[in-house]
Image 1 (cartoon, rainbow, N blue to C red):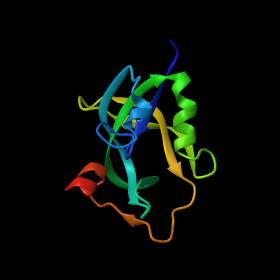
Image 2 (cartoon, one colour):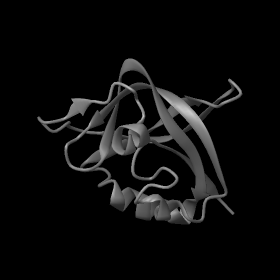
Image 3 (cartoon, rainbow, N blue to C red):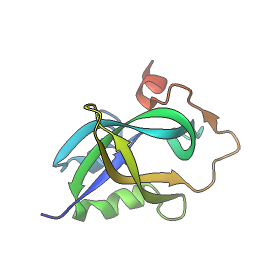
Image 4 (cartoon, one colour):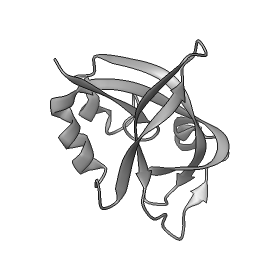
Length: 123
């Protein structure tokens, strides 16, 4: 089975409302990426490569057949673009996955200083 690795940082994370898009995941590994996480003010976050915050994420390996549904959820390519991006795993090794990067932040977007969407949303 062909798979693809996604780096997720918001509503696709385990336990979050859109995680069901990853229900066929082959593997889920906690990871971090370096950049800036924003609260868009629309109920979901956005990641930007600029900045040096350690953003909590998950590296999720899903069947490539499920990728189109995730692209639709993310509004790719209109709302979000995606690129291959490095991540750091808990053991200190690195891997690469596709991460969704918002094309244009909304004016009301604010930085999530902790870099942790779950902590920010659920305290």
